[in-house]
Length: 151
Image: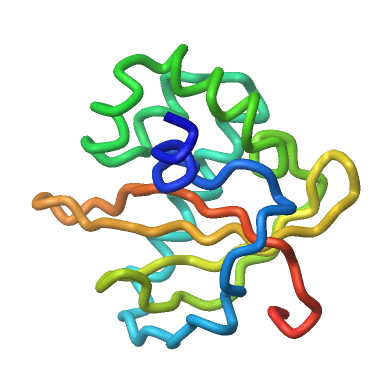
């Protein structure tokens, strides 16, 4: 179960403990060319989810997740418990800086530098999926150890 939480989340948010070593976003990053309206929409969805986390508004935060994330966690309450327990940097960020959109597993993912409540910077990578109606939704979140060259 812990493994599946590492691969899915936020609304979804997806990788537990910030100290887990995975390939850096730079090691696997290929910048993706997306139209500016899609880039803005992706950023807005992530910003809106983070704002919902800061308000402890589980229903709204959950609404920004893809149907597959929603299916995995079933309810906003279960989803929020997972976020609170494993994704503190995005649940209670001190600062958020949006970086580039990269290709990740065949689709777009937004890289975001997040300074967590402990003052530690991490790289959050948000895989995104565009729904049939054109709306972008969060299809997970991977929290990677931050490296200066990820900036």
